[in-house]
Length: 77
Image 1 (tube, rainbow, N blue to C red):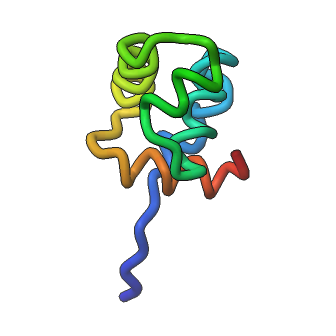
Image 2 (cartoon, rainbow, N blue to C red):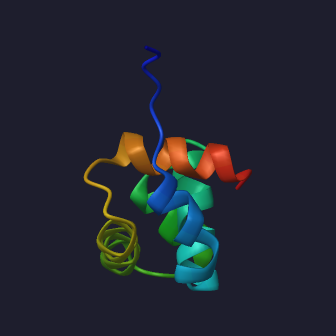
């Protein structure tokens, strides 16, 4: 038996479920940017970035930032 970490549900729906700005925010976070750095880069407030990332977690059934980053990397974002 092989143990692997995968999120087929999240990966299958990630690109279609996320709005372009949500994808952009996810890309910044996956690259190691903080919420404040992401907000400045996108011309938003840190609260808006936080809202985007909460929506991403809800849409994809993800609970942690680490899971979001893993998903972004696997999708090539």
